[in-house]
Image (cartoon, rainbow, N blue to C red; front, side, top):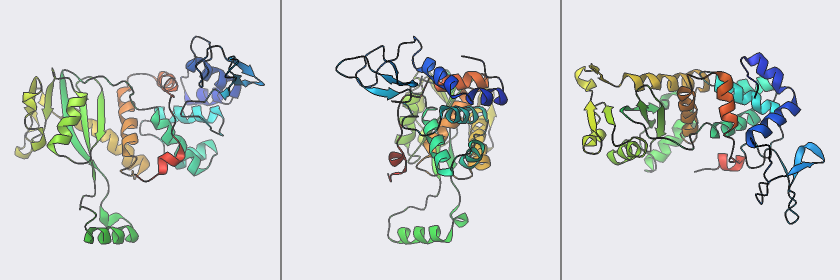
Length: 314
């Protein structure tokens, strides 16, 4: 793959649709053998045009495009626009809004929003590794105040609350876990109960690790499940005790807050997990170059997200 060192160089390359198709084919089929997505037969050949394929199996004979089975499947936009959007969302330190992307690519706002949500599917870690050694854990709360919401939203909340259908919580808790000099993970939570928080930590942190947290009661007892548990008591004015602190994960939270407040402004509880994946991915790949980050993402496009599944009520 050619080295894309600047945005100008990337945009110039993405204007050639044939070059984009060839690049994507190389990323999906590194050995040069195209595999049929329907029957798994190897050796599909170009059909009608250089951008379409046909299975060579006499019983299958399926016709398909390079995007079948990926987050780009059934798209009406050229690959060049997808690659430009992918480069922008991975290179911009605070992300890019759908309105800005729509203006940059010359597409509709709805199409840009759907495009970004599909690209965020590529940012999640499909093969996560346990965090190890010293791991800082802390919680952050995402969401605005009810007094800043529209009159109709406040009225609806009041009616639902009076009917007993809604709690007074206005923010969504997110648990952050960060390995010293390593990677970070963000997990959206339904609440901050001991069962919820400890369950997430067990799934993502090695038992041989030393956990460092604040004095939240839900962390009590972690010393019995892990190699150690150190507590920084913020309520008593303690923030650093030698190597015991949670400053790293709190600094990581600042990236999430700047991304949401500075670029996206408002994120719904339903889609918050995707934005957390975006923030984590950008942080965990902070030491590699933009072109390398783009190539890494392009190799992780398997899976599909349909619009009706994205907007359906949970």
